[in-house]
Image (cartoon, rainbow, N blue to C red; front, side, top):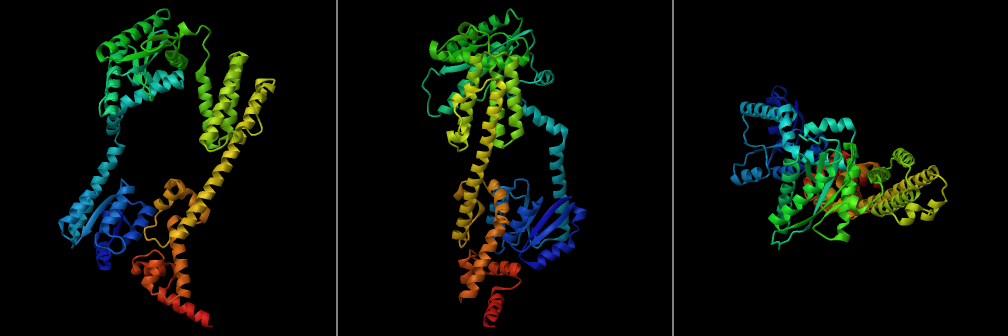
Length: 538
């Protein structure tokens, strides 16, 4: 059953529709009816109904203003305009605001029932489409190219379990068969031409052309796999026999480089990894291909660079460090202390098992300390706030890797505490500023949640989550109460007329002010003033 609210300033119209309509038989539950747009919008925020039926001509906020707010914030709510105005301008505005339908008064009960039944069927169909497996499968197929690209990027950056790789390769139609694997990383050196006015579009077109050539050579002709990374590099995964795959990779890379220069007039550089035996080793191969690409700085553009030609020692697994750094900083930022402890335990254990040379261990530990300091800067802390009283030189006073782990754990946990203090302090200051802003601008009828959030540079959702615990009230409740408190003060201390007083506390419509005042105090402003005077004279 779908929920529905109704808004009309004519009580007899609302009551007539309510009594004459069998809501449940039409598939709806009427969860509220209102006589003005402001109250209705507060109800929409609170109830989030499936359908809103609203009149156009209403006090405080008309139906079109209400519709505009609903459409801007709640894309799934259907809005139906009901009005006695047959002016086409209203219809045009309603259509522009993407209302569901446009009905004219007087509403015939039988026609309204038929309309609701039809609307219910449309909502059922919409729900079925979202739930229908065939429909979802169609959407999934349309998303397949992007999902394939993200899968491949994760395969070469984060690594995966063997069972997950085996399950997903056929799903994406990928064939990485062979005992050996190597990775090519291609980057454009120079577009080789003068780009015109729409430079971004032209660059994108040329990148696509480069992708097509690499795809043709590596994927279609050899059976490898090609994809594009988020930083616009092209990656080729080449598989084959252990003693041939590196040669195959270099041959394909040279063919691609030559073809791109010949047909597109552009130069590219390609970095090539060593051979690795398992697909789970691809993160190591990918890091090597990127490292080979970095040698372009020394060797120049338009080259094929194999890491084995530039580095002669055994390859160090940099992917393990990168995963550790990513997980550790994420855990610090989210305050997950257990995850910090577990991540450091796992990483130090891996260093022990790999028999990592001492110089290499120190290099990675230095890198991690720098990453922690950079994370501190990103979150608004100073370098000293991250390391505290520690220094880089303290690393060398630790006798074992276990001592290093405990030292790092202390630094990271203290980082979490300082970050929490900083957030509490900053959020508290922002909320204080928000309250002060409300107190200063409560007389502005246009005062809104977005206006306050813009002032303190905080998102509306985060502000709402913090504001109620801080004040004990929602934003609307707080503003309303503060305005009414100010109104009470003025009623007790001035002789302002109701319409003058309403304007001074942010209500341009004195009638709406009187409605709100009575709802919260049980008295009209005039009655409140009289009671207050009687109390003072006692």
